Length: 223
Image (cartoon, rainbow, N blue to C red):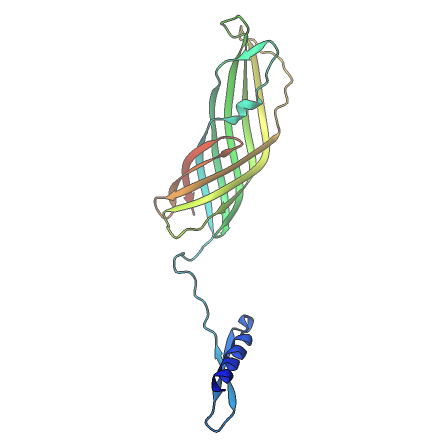
């Protein structure tokens, strides 16, 4: 019988537990008979000691991407084939405000140039050369994956925005050719990467993705 009463009291104690009130209670038996409810404050949970205290930061990065995927905006002409591409960049710069441990928002700007010669079939000299110079301006969202190590920070990048193009096409003699082309106005980049923290406020980053580039590396700073 005593065992049954003890189990009943244990069940009542568990059923009355309410995390919202941060209290638990237990039943105390008195020698003369009867029970009395005794409240006990629930101890507060401590922050994970493996993670440092978070403070908002402004993150600045400069990088270089490869290859420049703006080359796919160059047109294909009938009865011509393309030679090897030449490229510069994209060179990238980003400024982000990290407002919590796992998210930052800001802007990313890229600049690069791609060019290619066009050959007529059975002709060893290019008949036409085309180039595109581009600036892109994108909203930049970065989601971080907190880890216990302060030396590395993995992240996902999602950026969308607009392109600003300058086009140039010349013939075999170097004269400008007037052409009306319409490369995409939509700019984007999705990447997965990691920051390698060399000091408290500076480090390097490396990422892989698609949009303006496939691989990118550079320097990162936070203030």
